[in-house]
Image 1: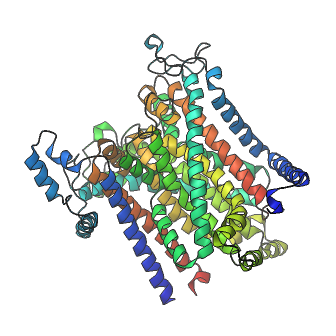
Image 2: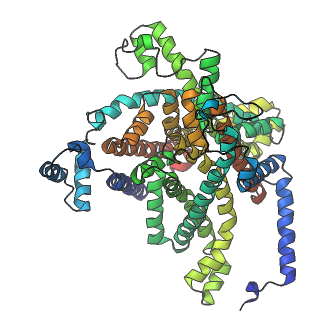
Image 3: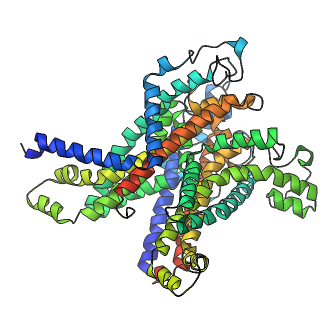
Length: 335
Length: 294
């Protein structure tokens, strides 16, 4: 038991070190001159050399990596060339927007995907199963940025239901004091219901678009988990004893897949971080994804390395959480 | 040489019968048949693109910019007056180019790492899987973005970046297969007869891992199409004026509210192709997985 934990921790530690090394290497081979980005193209030779040495670029790669690790240990990801602020500060500003979007998306995805999967499994090889299969495949195959644009076209431009670009109507921009960074919570704390409605109208469409992938994923996984349960003998026993289909499906089989579902939910949440990059670009959502792509296009090296690292850490943390959830809630995994 | 390298006519006949039987079984599923049909159309369009396209995909005609779909321009024109249909048709070549190249790189690479890792086990396995874990600890699009940032935007770099992020799942799969087989009697028998490691890996293990790896590669093609389109959309993949579908969407974005066809058409094409690969992969999975056929 103890040995297993130790092995798990060293595994996570080496993965973390690898993650750092990979981010570092990506940052070092970027075809941009970090010195030039700081001193500007008109600087003379001496200034260039001075900054070059200040950044430690004259030292061997392993020393540079050590310095990078040292800075990281102090929570220093460097300064963003674009905003002039420390990258950590920038990320703290943009991450709540992404979390708000991803959380609503996973809720929508789970509320639709899980019942769809259960429905498909309890009608195995009949039309509900085929409908769910096609819906799931559609969700997997749709280019999410295109889906978002089509959503904007129909629900914003043509029907006028959705709130368009950004997190909140222009009239409320800057009027809501920032407390948590989550727009829905902040507007409620400010007691401004009109602003809350505006924020919700802006949030719903991108959340639905982003939730499509998790809906597809969750329905497929739920279906296969349920199928595994429904083919077991205790189900037949329950049916023979006179329980209704409904009771058997929801009262017996579904209860037994809850742990697996929880694990899958954590993994799906990690997958949303990826979709967020594209969806945020489409909806002008000032979150992590917009920050990453924006700094990528401008060659803002510190910002790119910092955000890639943070997203990797979040992703690993979610995977570990999924693992831990399984171990805590499944009695068979405890021994 | 061995008899295996000189198969008799009968062996070919048996192989052909086997293949055609499984192909017929595969196509019996209507959804899989649709997927295969769409992929066949895609390949045909890519092969005969210059004859199918009604216009030159790159020729600009500013007088005819942003025209809605009509008899002359089936899917309308974009902001430079280029024919959207012809650009879509020529875009099939880019899509197929990306999918093929990524698969050709990722398949052998993932397979080699996985089979070696699973066969030898121990330290080799530990190192290989740790490296794979590092690559798996980023969302694949974010990692591809970072690689493109490091390499600079462009079609070739996008292909390389996607390939770099796509091999670990293949390696994991091949490793799992190799691990279940490495202590099998026929492998031990081959080793006792003095077969080298390389020979065991190449002649005995790799062929048995191939079916599941191929299924996984097919399903992977759908996500390759989507990732490539996403990179194109963000301006990091194929560069203008190449008619890559993702970058077409990105170019049409500014005019989307009035000229929806510039965005709708390439997106529908991406959806169709990615759906087709998913349908085929799903069908292959069902056909090759004996647990599901009851």
